[in-house]
Length: 496
Image 1: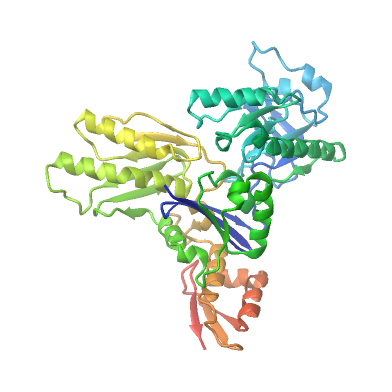
Image 2: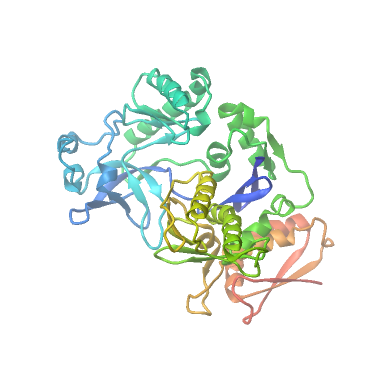
């Protein structure tokens, strides 16, 4: 399977797409001023302890306090000394007794935490005291002395070989061998180890000179983070359309993954990278709730607060044999597409897939095996239950960042929340791309008039930089024409 990582870094937005055999399976976004918090390490102060919920609120300098569950507080490190007071450490109960949140932390206490889940739905971020620092091949656990191997490394001989290497490292802290460590020698893992232990030392030094709330470590930006976490060793190309981002990626990969660095390519095509390779079209399709299959069947995806419901329909596909054969063919065709859409849209929580009911138990087993194999490609942690007698498969999938729909759209103000429209920021960034596509479309000095709804006009007026560099690059003047009847999240470019 040919895998490529595509990086579109056009300020104020960076987008990354992973493709498999030319099909987009993951899309990640990061916008200026709206970077995610997952992976950041903070020096915080416990604001409130809630024994009834076995949790605590921790002030880390954000609008909303972070949420610390007891199980995330119970895994506090012993070796990674961030200066927590001795009283709190002495209060930790014996291993045989389940710890309580008020035994582990107290109001006013300084505490080092790491964000594990971004703020969502009016809630603050979720944090843990068990700091983990990921590299390309290793995860460093400053607070424990244990070693482990990624569950994706299935071969027991390889798992044991990696475990012996990690146990031979010595020194404080523990390590987890990531999937990318597979087949690597101790010497090949050494640069990652040195980078991570140095990073931990820098965090400790910042802790010693800081007062809460304080940011001690910021996670890598999307481009570097994707090269570290998303690009597999077998990635055949990393294409980048921005010279500055290409330079940073080159420096980073030269240090942590020289083999991948040799596959780094600057994009030189006249057509923008995402448009030329079909990513823009895939993103647009992923914002719709219906996905057509080649046979004429379809998949319908509905996201709710409680769960994600995915329904498989035969549609126009009637098959050429009996009903059971038609149903089996439809389900087997839908299975890989359902798995791809889950990854592409970054659907999380409880997902219920309503495959078409099949009478033959062998057909059900065939579907479950095929679907499980497709889900195994997902980087996120998933758990699938057996298919029910009604053809339903329940999946739980971990998600730490907002999904595609919630990132790019908002509830539609015209339909009482029953649908969604693109946010003004999404529409503004799409307008920037449209104005620059294709190059040399406009004559120097030309006035380009753009019809926009009031909300988009207000955003562009508040953040004039969104269009200023486009005007300078194209030597044109962009004139906004407010149309109160225009649908939210839309625009229309007019010449002359």
